[in-house]
Image (tube, rainbow, N blue to C red; front, side):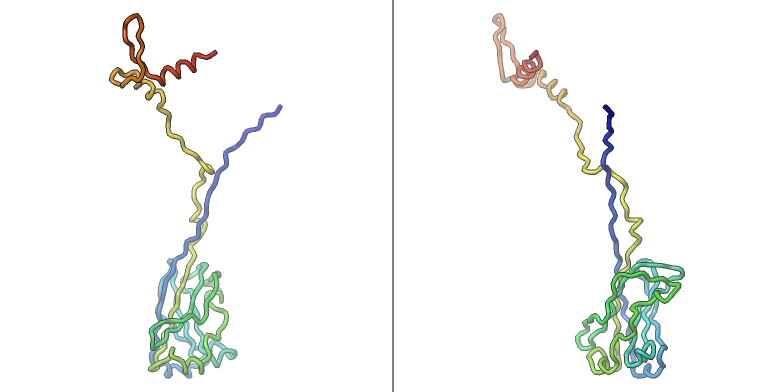
Length: 216
């Protein structure tokens, strides 16, 4: 009959690691930025998350004709010749409480610095301008954009080395040493025999083992 060799089962793992970063873009004298024109924007200072450079784009008069009644806000990947998977949460800060609220949140997607996917979201209608100017987000001609960026690191570098699946480790047996210690005269014997008038000490466990091994 053919003999089959059973190969051991092995396992490796892959884990996701994400780095988060925040940037706050303070816009003072908001009303004076109005009238720049559709498609014109102000870029925030550069900030780094996940080893990549990013910035916020703010369009006071909207990104295009479709969004001319809105302000447009985007996250932009600035690192050159780079592709990275990331998501962003673009928020506005209530000037009366200092708390921010999410306006647009994107899912995890690929940013490619070499094409239009370097910016997110795809929608330029961030918030209606009339609604914004009547809200607590704009006070004293001051507007604050809060951006939270989450960058996923390359999962290929998070793969573990291959190991045996459900490997059970056994410590080396020292039964021979333990049985040998029972022959030490300093050990306290638990059985005595009288042989020819001489008292001999023994250990019950050795007698049991000897009897067992002596069976045919």
